[in-house]
Length: 299
Image (tube, rainbow, N blue to C red; front, side, top):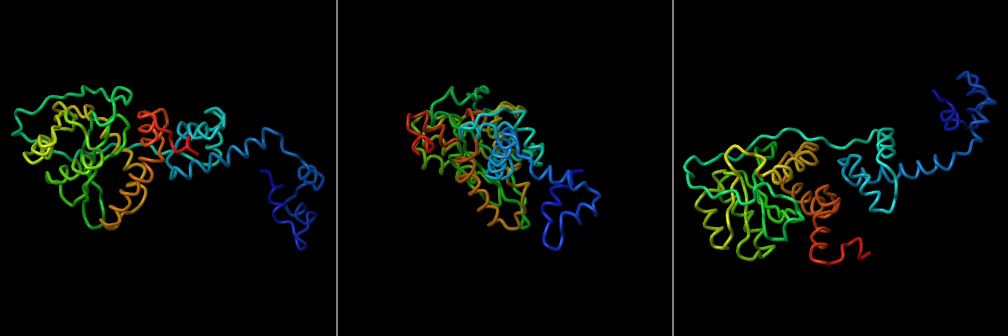
């Protein structure tokens, strides 16, 4: 064990180097040689790089692993390799968040015998679509000390941006209707938009189908017992739970609502790097699609 840094930190008028070396059975000559040592250029570069890595990890709320830390370093103009980033993160005890298995909340309606077909066929790649052409939706649950809070969300497949959401203490059809209404008000999609979800009773309800029809939105439903048919919505909820819900207590539904709102609008849509978007944020990716400068380019 290297005791020299301890001696350096503790030396005062009362605690001389000689006394410290005697107590710790360390050679004074070796200590003075160590204290005059000048770090190598690579060691200095590693110290600087470590500072950047720690900052990026903290800015990600402790969620980024090596790939996203590396992507942010490159966005900042810092060139390095994944092995070096992995080593520096390991030395500082920095780790990303890994996903848990999730439970399903939506229950299929057995009376929905003539359900619409799956119009997406798992074609989820952002490059394949323009904005406001295909949206996906789903429902998840959040545990609070006051009981369950349910979240319905709407995501634009072209940018992975959460464009609409609603929260309530129930899972009635009005929940998914409110989420879709928010998305419609925010985005004003043209007729013919595809809205895709699983076969939950909320999405096959008369109220929801009437809302789709009134805005000329085409409904698309996952095939029975095929959870991967709505993989983008499932992935979004896994991220939300991993990076927010499982990390902090949510004692009240009011606290949960505020935390989820802040996560969506401040972090997820505007700051979090997405691997499926070439490590851009959803807002940046949308600006690129329409040919406008991103905030980083404008700066």
